[in-house]
Length: 285
Image (cartoon, rainbow, N blue to C red; front, side, top):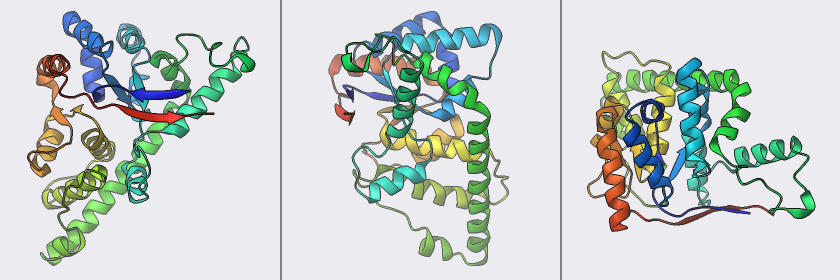
């Protein structure tokens, strides 16, 4: 079995998933249409933890939207440290969460006696990899995922405040210990992480680092480094664009009021075939 991205990769923050699911029906339909033209959605467990929380009509709308994404998605790591380690080891596709997909496949097959091992892959249902099924599988793990996000946030806050304390005592500490990194195409997460962390340390004066900043920071790194198009909130969009070289091969960032523009730009890019970037993600045997 081979999974691949045949066109642009889009990272959707949770606000974007919610707005696309519950907002303008025409925009939603147009976005789904781009998936059928080759766009793939980058999805992580950090998305799943929050999206499995809403109930009632809100949950129904989100779940229906995720089912419309169908199989046009792939799982990504939500811990940038893991991606950076893989970049240093020059591993292929450091952002792809192969472990998560393998676990999902094994569990679904265990609960699906109608799937015959001898007839794989023909015996797999056509909706086997539908994103809604993946969400259902992750939903019981929501509390553990939230705990992991909280721990990541606390670790980031502690790191930033410790770095800021050193920077405050010695203005030369930042350049010596967190120097500005040059952009290289084979280590995009290393570049974004290092320079974004450096910016956060400089911003820390007079600003409280909240625990939720940890997962926001992680999503900003993963989305910016590996997607063609990414959505982030206004403050993280501003931070990311502060550190980007121009021109660059990193994601184009959109925030909440720009979702209409994002869909138009994706449509235009598909028409021009300017964002196509095929990748073979993984093979299982």
